[in-house]
Image 1 (cartoon, rainbow, N blue to C red):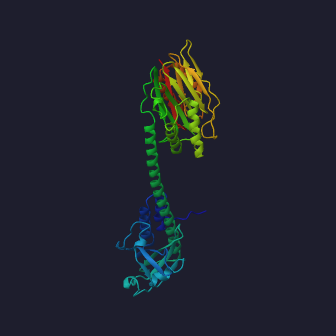
Image 2 (cartoon, rainbow, N blue to C red):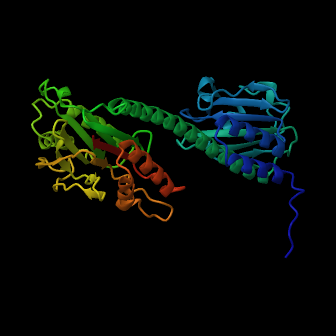
Image 3 (cartoon, helix red, strand yellow):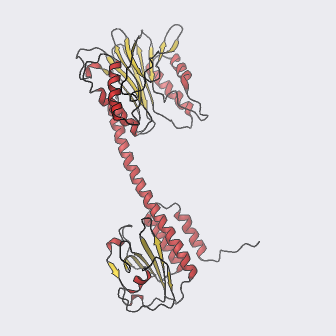
Length: 436
């Protein structure tokens, strides 16, 4: 076996440079300029022409670019995709014949004086090679090279030029697609950021002051916009409520999935909540109202879990209803300290069935007791070994302190420690209340 020395082939390093450069090219103009430089080095033409026959009759063409070996741009490049369309339609002459079919052409001993389009400007050229360039939209462009020598190009040149020109065309199309994808991505990011800003407005900016309660919250979205939602406010704010209703609404909810679609569903939850037209008799009635509006939309992302409660500051009584959500944890200070799950009814998530008969339940928070409501992104957070954070770690943190802000801070720190180098897989929201 004998290795052939290719280093003396002048085109090999030039073409190798182009192949290496073109694979990462993202700018269509840069790709085209690289192609022109490689053609000049590899084929040494006296003149380079790029033609377009898109949408034209046989024998008609537009000159997209015309460059001679001295570097003069007789027809300079314009914006790619619009260059040819800005040029006049030409007919007749040598180039009309070269572009009449979709096959390459090589002419030796060329003589083209008094061309009807170019006049005597082709008279000094003695060889021409023309290759078709097939575009993705079925349009046909051409690359035409002229040489001063009667046999300046050969059959191998035509084959190499045709392959190189069409490879460049594909790279240019890819670069165009990449640019459009980047532009679309920026638009989507701007829209998602707008959704996220709207969502931030809907969420409480800081925990409200609830008589007799300490309150802390945490909201971390997996994406710019998240599918979790929580709120704490006086029931008096609802349009049908009495102005002297002393109760407070506490809500935590989680839309199926995450990201913009889930975030939009959370804005729907907020909007529907504040259209409830009656006096809010019970949490179950409010959840049923939400379910009716979500189910009417029949959206794939309409399934929402949640817990909604009415809290009475004077008595510490919390009446609540469940819609398929994780049970809250309650810390009883003891001694001994106990952390227990709050018993919930078997409520279905919202948006699945036309009706939702959420059953109300109640508990009374005693002084010093702490209640932790959370979305599934907290216990489901996984580490590098795919082990979930789990309820036991949550119980341990809650057992260690009943101060709401400390609970939030320690849980967030433990979540970060647990996930290590992995990225969060879901939104994480916590609402922690303690009765004083």
